[in-house]
Image (cartoon, rainbow, N blue to C red; front, side, top):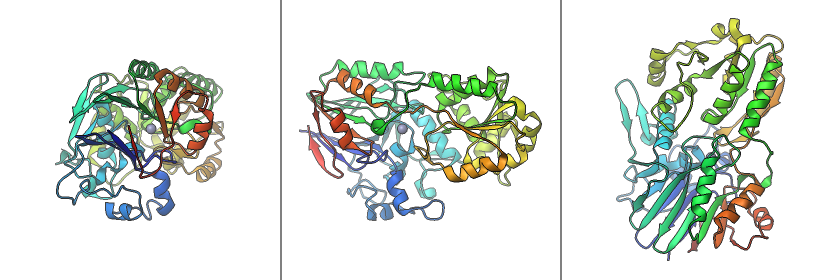
Length: 449
Ligand SMILES: [Zn+2]
């Protein structure tokens, strides 16, 4: 008999931490940060958790012996990270560094890039990787895979398959233990540019006799019918009707959105000005042959950076390769630019001085985003200050309810458990016409299969 215990992702969006226990092996499926639950107690940057003991005390980390840094011997064989969103890997920083992290090669690239240009943990004791002038180090034991390859951990056999989501390096998993098969979707969608990947995953899963499906169900509360192609088209049309500066805000690591904005810009004979962190990510993704994205040296790409007194090593490496423009340098060319900037860049816009007939496009979900909460009210105040009307053009990174129902029908498991959603009961009622056992997960409780 195998066991699954849910330590996160239950009744919440993200924070997935699912312990899978077979007769011989124990692995976590994701070990993500619980944004919602952290916000219940903390307010960054004024008050944030300092160590695992505080999160354990608050019940945000699972109380399991042998997984944290002070424990003598790790008693978990690994963490399988589905994709590089913090709500799926953000708490791995608290785990013993001897516990291997299994993830896609591209997933690792995005995580290491994140750690080099910021860091997930509360202090240097919690770095997954680190970059300074003298240090370029990975502290975790990353064991990477590619789509369709197989990984064996003890008696658990894992087949990772690329899926389409709002970040590169997203995988779903077909997991075989003895005669049993478990499918874990991670986060996925079928309305993106590369949604064929998700369809291939569903197709592969459908060819197996699936005992248990653990699926994301983020959008069970509603979603907009749209697609990444439509997003690009809407942006292109809106930009064509604008004579001033166009500012677009979206999730930094959403490479498909970046592509859409780039296309919409060049079709309007504008250049795209990406943020320096985004430029650094593009630089890292060059080594990922499967990720098709433009280069920072592309003639239609500019890099926009903050004025800083101290330059980090990742910024130094970027500056060595490309010119980073400040607000004053964007000012004279603003009518020919689509500027990627978020709420956190609003100070810098002062030097850009947006001319009249400039606009702001919010291209992310509001107010919640997997990379954190955006400050919607404050953002509106800034937009008013600069005279920027705000448009929302967005498509979710998650599958819509009717598409999810179709996906479950395709996989045709014996049992399904929805996670990564706030209304599991709604899921159960909506899916009740499927001839499938629907079980709702309970926090810290174990199901057998
Ligand atoms: Zn995600």
